[in-house]
Length: 484
Image (tube, rainbow, N blue to C red; front, side, top):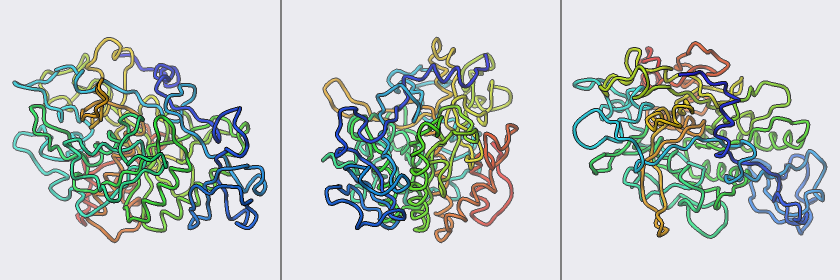
């Protein structure tokens, strides 16, 4: 199995990238239609013209999300463009995920009699000994969920919406608090932007309650409560709506925000206004953190060194944002070292690359706080062997039938978007054990208990998420975990 150059292989999944544009992104749009952000620390409210519409008032952070003539408000540092994120644009990589097939199209590569189990594809949970429901150990053994399942906590998923009709997410989503931040007139559920948010939510809090023959999947913290905040309307979303979602999540008492959205720009000289945007994001993040909420963000999938000159990956590089890079195996349940015994899929030398291997697409650099399981891929193998999708992260999805009906399903995705919710779930575990812990204390525990793979800080920050060590430390037992 060949080792792929990260930049070269990234082009192979470019069709799933999300494009960026500024304001409304249309050459024919008038200045009065532009969306932009206002920094009230650089300009007073009294200086804002009456014809500028305020879309979101984030005054706690001294930030406004507005529509109108940006040039009429303050100087160059007083405003920043509101980035439009277009999931249908394959030109440039704000969000890159390699989407695998849904469960209906998966290979029946199970290693036991009867129907295949959905949970056997959850290498990300099995390697962390999350639950005896997933363990490969005869007779079970001590698992994370023997100590905590995240009970008494609340996390927000600011994303494309969450399909709460999924059997593994029923009762998980707080319908009363969940909301649509876009103003498109619909609710918090997915509205044309695919299953990204549902996949993220399942990674955090799926309950494994599907009583069908294949069973369900299990999240890191199945007893946490999810507040779904939809920031995408169809294929389009705005950074300003995301920031408003952060403030809302903090206001309703969320312990963490999962923000698997990012905007990586390779040339800040060409786009100097992004420096002003970074400051605005930092102000909102600090406000959210001061309210006791941890912001967990995907570090980006452009295979870029974020420490390089003129590279800026937002919001990861903003202040008070916890950045997560992605790792994943090569050869989970397939390949030259594969065993037909499912219990050996994660043991010995069965993997070509370990689960802590930096994913080929992940951004890296000093803005990374920790790494976590986001999925990896040998794209040459995937082209000819569907079982190679096993190296991606398997979770809940929503699908749309030919008749337009939204139905539950399961599927594979890979990206730092899939790594971030591993950490968000970890925050819920910590807060369930230490409800009074501050964001500093929670993040400190995650960093201090992380294990360091051989690639070091460049790819892993303080190390790779280690749930066993984390939960032991949070429960006051100390000691090291599994180091996986």
